[in-house]
Length: 214
Image (cartoon, rainbow, N blue to C red):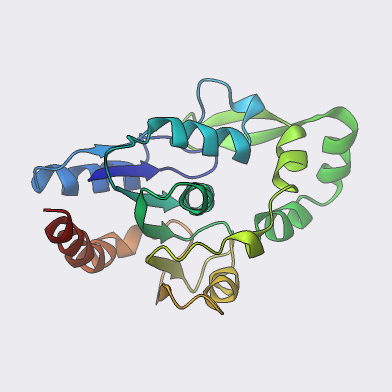
C-alpha cells in the first residue's frame, strides 16, 4: 500500500498537518509520501499540474491511500477518479466548489487578475507574497465536481467554522454519493485543534485496509 499526503493551496510539505501525519505514519512503521505541489514554480500552479504530478508518483503494482488537505483534497479526488489503484481517500476541508467559494471573495482584485494575468497570493509556508498566473483560474474552470463519480471509499473531515471553504461544499459533495462519509468538527479551515481526533478516526480504516492488502 502506498500512502500520499497532498498539502493545501499556498502551503507545502512543511505544513503542520503534513508533519503531524508523517509522524503518525512513522510511528506505525509506514512511509507517508508528501510531495511538494508547488514544484518550485508557484506562478504556474494549476489543478491539472497537481493531478499529473500525483499520478506520476503512483506505482502501478500498489494500491494507494490519498490524504488531501483543502486544494490537495480536491486534487486527491480527481486523482482517485482517474486512477483505479486509489482505494481510499481521506479529505481534510476539501476545496470542492473552489472557484465559486474563493474567487468572489477577491472582489476588485479578480478583475485586476484577469487584466494583468498575475495575482499576489500569500504563501503560508514561504511567509511571503508570491505571484500566481490567471491560468490557474482558466484551468480550474475546466473541472466540474459533478464528474467525480468513481465510488472510492471516502471520509471527509470539515470544520463547521471554516471561513475559507464552507462546510456546505462538503455537504453538497456528500449528497448522492453513498461511498462518502463526512465528519463535521468544531474547527476552522486549518483543523489544527482537531488533528488528534481526525487521526483517531483515520487509523482504524488505514489498519483495516492494511489487513485487506496483506
